Image 1 (cartoon, rainbow, N blue to C red):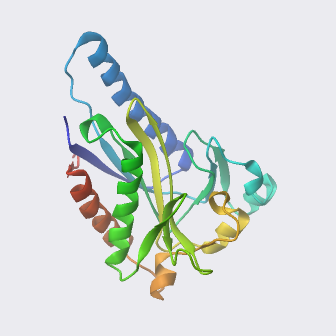
Image 2: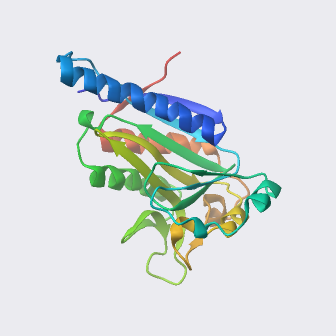
Length: 235
């Protein structure tokens, strides 16, 4: 059982390039697990946690509805945005500058084999982080992600989530709005949920900009406790 996680901050990176990189890491873990099972090799499986900030992009999960994207490809181009259909759960999601996007690529055999628990822990990491900024964030029944003012007409989503898991190996993850341009959310029905607003941490705090690095530090602190993990960086 390996509870150490390699932390990589990819900076500002194209969505498709990052997706391909995730697939590469994901496959390396799965291949090790297959080798262990077939040959009783006893090899340690690696875990990774990627931070990244993407250019404007819309992604649609495998069970998503294309009609939740409200603009044409030509209009997307005008907005300097791209679109991809991806192999994660969930519906349509936007990524862009001002978001902290996290992709944990973990072998859950190293932690716990429970996808429901995994998602709840990711949500809890966000909830605990936002609490440090004085915000009461919550889960919304039947709607993965993290919300504010749940159960009121002012309910708004601050963090979207969508994961894929195979052989207990995870990929994709969460997108937390920190200094996001909320106008881009008007071009879709976020996560396929009508009539719900979207917000960003800087808007909630009434400030122009929140430190993305500070948010990342807080996220990692809570992730580490929840997953009883240790992070390291390869030099």
